[in-house]
Image (cartoon, rainbow, N blue to C red; front, side):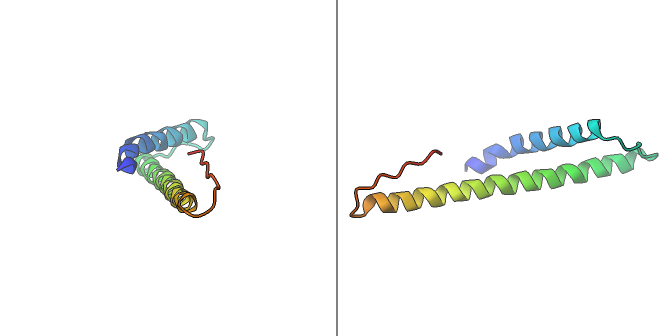
Length: 85
């Protein structure tokens, strides 16, 4: 499946976005290092989840549009359905 091949890239993007967020963050660092590690992990997990759901949504929409297009093209009309996917 195409989605499973994208997961490492999505996770890498989530790590990069979280790291970039920590670089530009103006808050003071926590006294406890493990608190920072837990917060970084949770934020990365949230960003990964949002990105994964977004990719799944667009993949589902792409499948839906293709199915509708094929249905129109197999009908009586001479309409051509062009998709930019």
